[in-house]
Image (cartoon, rainbow over all chains, first blue to last red; front, side):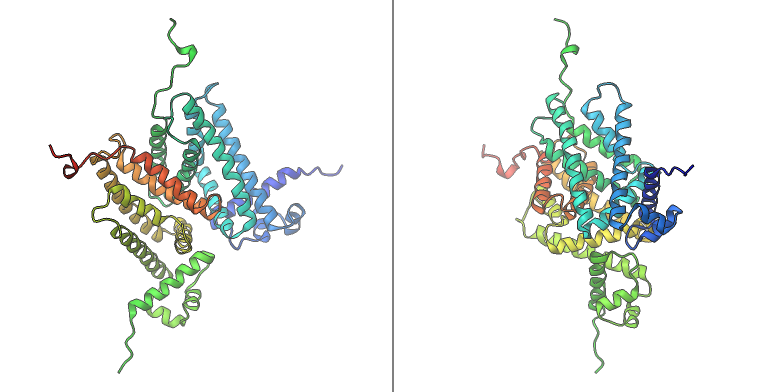
Length: 211
Length: 211
């Protein structure tokens, strides 16, 4: 019987090798040969799955983002049945921060991609697509916060969403430099969220005292 | 008569070569030989001024920061005699954003240093020193804003200062990726400042209507 090869599993194994390289030495100067060695397969086997470096790097980036989205979805689903927009936002931001070794590796890999994307049009195009999607998601949560009366109506959800995305990036940089600790970075995020959601929620119909 | 060599000018010339390399290809894999070639001098001449890569990189970083401080000081001095803390803060943040080609090169060089500092203890130590200084400066301006009644008293100047520093870093990353334009990034900073300085200033004694 011919041996059944799980192609998707092999592609993910190769993608993992890319992140490990990205997080330890960056992606500049990394070639298909380095990735094959890191993944423990031959160059020929790797080229069976990916014909170019750009194809491989883009796949690895998409897969990394998919895993991050899955982790966020899991965190949100672990919350109560109808979590508040503030709580959902807080889980997303905490997941994006390099709070533990696992997310630290992810953030280091993102930075390696970022540095490469500055000079690489194709990767840059990909990065340009992803951010507006996240921004729309955050803006939606903030709009819900405004509708519930928790976020002051004079705050602009779209601007606040982009500020949150930028903020996490910046806080991660200073976290990696050791300027602040994971706890201090998370406390800054919570402080900022408390300013955004500065109003007590309007009582929902079910919670209003019976007339 | 022996030729007078301006040692400081030569050191600055070498530092400039480091930034050009940092902004175009990053600092990983860059050696003293590359810097000498970029500066248009011999390796021996370079080694007369800097005996190690770390010494050279640290000098170049300090000099880059000094120039940035000078640019900010110039901008602030060009303001009125007694600029408001909000205006001083705005000038500092605008100077830190990669709004033109010149500051774009500076930010690219900073990123190259940042990536190197993640894995280099000596550079990381240097980065750890610089941030608290800037944070204290920003926090002082915000405290002045609170004292003048322009910043709500429930805002924490020290936390807001670190959020501002992180924010500029993050907005610069998305600016370099082309996610937003320089104008859009500056508008986000102004939007954030308007939220921070959300109160009308208290009339100062001199401005109070004569009794």
